[in-house]
Length: 361
Ligand code: SF4
Image (cartoon, helix red, strand yellow):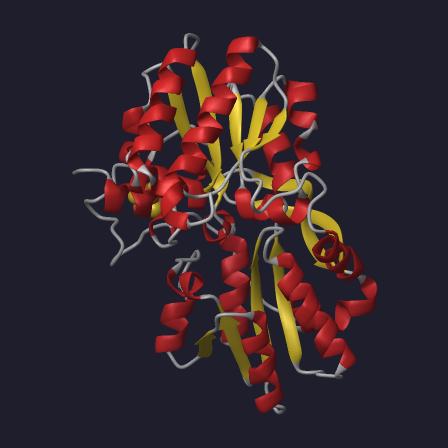
């Protein structure tokens, strides 16, 4: 197939649904790790097309949603420092922290600018040499190369007023952590497409080997997702879990070596704080010692109050796949996109926002 419309062909979709129905006999509990997949599944009504024994749960693959309140509080505290410009992707600005949000801080006078790339943030640093420009570095392995490239460029060009609050997170370690928690008894994982374009499929191999859980990497069109479900069901029915790729047009088993090299040159792994899961060893990235001068946390000294969660918000449980947005008492009543109580209602990849948009009330 060459054109994107072909990945939305209703006739091919019907054939894949029929194949899944014919293949599936055992209960199959699948997690779509990535928030982008959750949105695609909701938008295309894919859950409703599957036989009742095939269950799909949302996972923690939404970078905005998994950013812990303690880290959002740090970004807000930096925004309130004199002569600081905060640069951030759009979704982050509305996310409530423990006591405020970047949006509120901006309304109170902080200089906070939405950017579409780390290059935009670097340009703001170039144009404002008397200010400190902080880029809020959220994201997974997909975003890490772009932040690495910006840090390298800042180093090469001696841009000394550019910093990043590095909140980058890694997907395979958090999958391991979820499996170790054992709350879900998963049979299969729909592995993220964009992340896998960077890291490849090899880093998931421990999952079938050590946990007996099937893995299929896929893309974001309806046929990609249905194909991945068919492949997962086939593995589960045969009792032969392995890692497969249903997204060959973007993902190679070995990943993107250039992007991986960039990540490895600039970052070391470190622990990271995940909303709903907590601090997980080696599940985040920090700047290597040679680049520490760009580390916002090292540069600014902050006084922070203890972080706290919004009362009644169950984003943490939703991100672990143990609850769905409709289990939240605040869903649609108190919490909606114009008044989000938690990040899962803010982000374009958040499960609550996706349920709000596509699940009938
Ligand atoms: Fe949190 Fe709102 Fe989702 Fe409830 S509906 S879990 S309050 S974001």
